[in-house]
Length: 119
Image 1 (cartoon, rainbow, N blue to C red):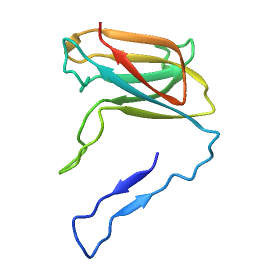
Image 2: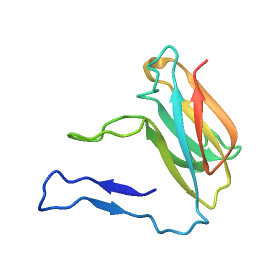
Image 3: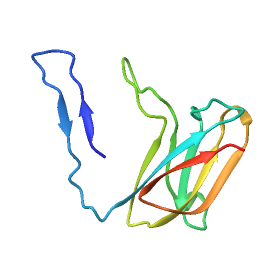
């Protein structure tokens, strides 16, 4: 993932940081579409596990929470991004906010963005 750092001040130019890591590494982006929670899934907690091992703490590859801000005057997409190294398939667990439930998607192929929909 590349990062753009916008500057508000003319004496400090904006900076584009290009990711030059090996293209052999895999990734997964997870978005949540809510029905009884907010539409963008804000507050949902995402956990990614090795395939077939959802819920096993020692198989956890990463975790994050969907938010759309990370500080003063910032904004981000309502998506969680996971770098997975050599992993090519994983299980995704979504814990919805406000006690609205849990969704598990096993055997997800990597190198894509998935949308987990609340039914």
